[in-house]
Structure formats: C-alpha cells, structure tokens
Image 1 (cartoon, rainbow, N blue to C red):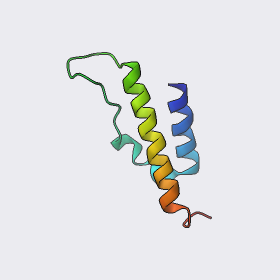
Image 2: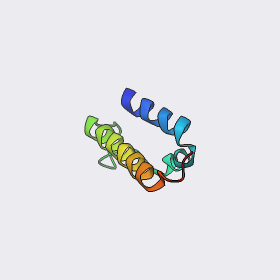
Image 3: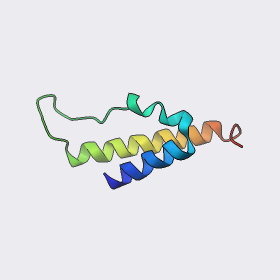
Image 4: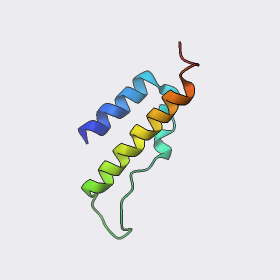
Length: 65
C-alpha cells in the first residue's frame, strides 16, 4: 500500500493530467462476494498504475516542458 501511495502522490504532483483518470482505475477486488482486498489484488493494482504512468510518459514525453 505504501508503494501505491507513493506512486499516486508522484502522479498527482508531476502528472496531474494523468491523475484525473486514476478514479477510473478501480482496485480489483477479486471475487464479488469477497469483502477483503487480497495481496494479489493490491499488487495487480500497483502494476496497473505503473503501466499507466510508463505509457503516459512515453506517449507524452515531447509535450512536457
């Protein structure tokens, strides 16, 4: 969870144009009847955030100051 917090803070600070889309990237919760978040779900979410940031940087590297 600390990695997710650090990454979302970095995105919010350095890539606000990407940050607005994070609410559209839900944390997967596995089984619908499951009420807890599994470690694998958190890891998958972190990897999704990393991938989104990498893609954003790659596709927008010429538009940043």
